[in-house]
Length: 521
Image (tube, rainbow, N blue to C red; front, side):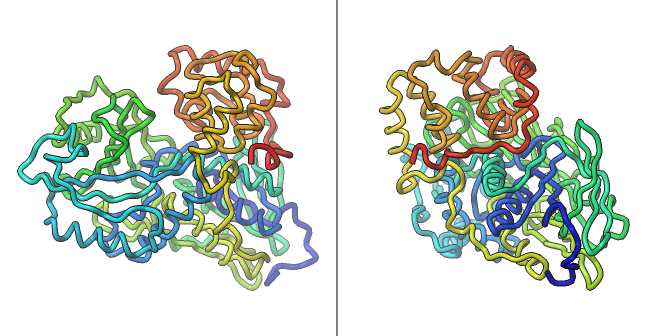
């Protein structure tokens, strides 16, 4: 165990602070190596940055402009790997990149896309092609410009908050303890390890850990501040990214990558069948790292982008939903928020008589698995275990050949009395674990009360018992996006139902899924 004292008694090998994608990914990797893991999250899983992304698994085409070749290559390699790991929540998405209004010459864009096609060992995703928007159906809904040329390339879509929950679920299935609504109060080095004080609704208690992992995202500096002798030679730069959701702007399953005169780019993406997701912005954030909200300047910027490219007029009154997140980027002293690196930095604070603390700066959702692998590699002098996650599917992803359509067809055949639209949604959320959720269901009445949009008591119980959900907000906007579809009174009705559930069920913090792996196949 390196410099740690073997005789010391610890409650856990790793204490991980932060239940976003990086913390959940590290917990999963560590638990799969046979290590004992305790993860504490002060709010709900994915309740901040990790549920406020543009929801893409991508290499980051625009990062090539900043010569982030290592990051782009790593992300491109991870792109198809993650798709194979979770085909129910990750799937291919085609992007149309119009040259209309482009501040970049077509030859430069095409060169960037050539690199994008070849840097990461693309296997299943199609190569870039060129289309004429005035003749191709992909141009429908766009304003006609002087240059009708567009490039079409592919990346992947991800249900970001579900990716976090599935990593936490897999970590718990492998023995990790996941405590939500539990915060780190302070931590100090003692007996070649850590003594940390954590606090939940029941009060405070101490935990002894071999290693402390600071994966607190926007709170990474605050966690460092709770450690008396922490090294503080790395900086975090907080950048706000905001999105708007509007009624569907165009037909088709493709997305658009829109170039603006200031050289920033904005995505327009089909969202929840009825909507288009527009984003993101990049604004420096100097406030507290809590939940941010979109400001008027960001709304105006995104609406101006829509007006620049699309035929259909959109006003602020049309906006159905907005969300904003604070990205905790590594401070590389770039001049603008858009140019700050999206690469990650792992800062190991350890020594011969100094218990190890690993702090995570930066990162992007596409590279979370590799980041976790690198984190455990950094900690290898203190903790044993070999890398294993590269070919391991996430919960629900173990469907034959990763074929979600075939699985959905089988699900519909097994449950002919249930609405196919509901079954498709459940399959996309839970994959093969849908069979566990629906065990014993023969008729819609078996699912219990319907709170709207097909969200039933049976599903809510599953989310509380197996995915740490505690509130209507958890269920409607993180475990799903049904908040965009349910009636206005649904949240109050759901919270009322949750209050009526027995406290043991509501407060269960380490759900178990014994037997799920044997069901659904």
